Image (cartoon, rainbow, N blue to C red; front, side, top):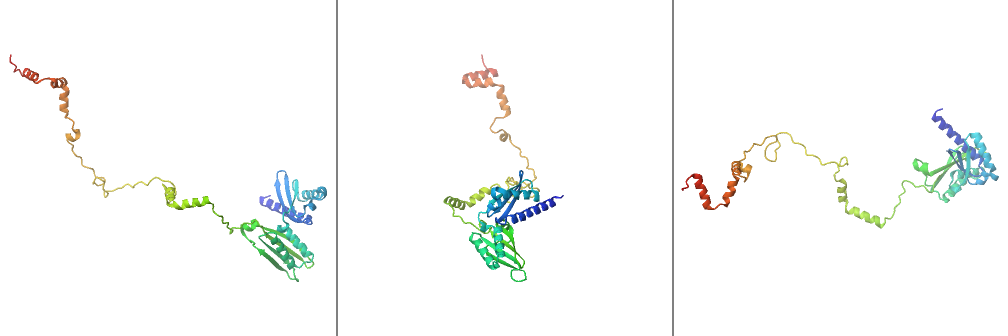
Length: 311
C-alpha cells in the first residue's frame, strides 16, 4: 500500500471517530476531539461542557466508550481523557449544537441566529459569523448569514485564529445545516501595531546614534569594497606599458640612463690616494721618528745620506 493511501485511510478513520464521539456525547455538550499517537498507545482527548455525563458512575461510561473505540476503529491501546471547556460561549462546536437544538425546538431562525451572535460577542470574541442553509421558509432552499465583529476569510490568520463548528438541525420540512465561525479573542492580526513609550536609556542611545552617523558609517565601511561588502587590500596601481609614459627622472619608459664617469675625488672623497698610503705604510718607523727629532739632528741625517758630511 502506498503512503498516500495510508494517509487517506488514517484521516477517514479519525473523521469517523469524531462523528461517533459527537453522537455518543451529545448530552454532555461535545466541543471537539484531539487524537495523538504515543509510544504507549493512542491518546484521545474529549472536550465537553459537562464531563460528568461522559465519565458516568465510577467510570462505567468511559470504559464502555474505550472498548467501543478499540473494537470498532481498531486503535492500539486507546486512552480517553475528558476535559471541561473553560468558556462554552467561545467554543464553535458547542454553539453550533445549541443553535441546531434551538431550531429543532421550534425557534424562528432569525431569532436563534441573532441571539447566538449576541451571546458569542458578549463572551469576548473579536468576531463571529453564523450561517444557516436549508428550507428556512417555504419549499425553496436559501442561506442566511449573521455576522458581527471582525472575521478573516483566508490566509494564515484564518487558519490560526478562526474556530469553526458544524451541526445539523432535523426539521419536518427538511434538514438545516448550521455553521458557526468564531474569532479567538487572543488573535493578533498582522495590521495591529503596538506603540511603546521609549525608556530614558533608549532615548540616550538614539541621541548618540544621531550625533555620529557619519563617523559610524566610516568605521563600518573602512577597508570594505562597496560592491561586494568584504574587506580587501588597497587596489594596486596598474603597470604602465609603452613609450608614452615618462619616469620621474625625465627619461621615457624603457629608455636607459647614460652612464656618468666618476672622478677619483667623487669616488674616494677626502681619502688619500692609494700610492701615498702604500708609501707611508712601507716607512712607518721613519715617519714616527721624524716627528720627535730636532732640526740639528735632521740636518745631520740628511748630510750623512748625501755624503756631504766633512770630517
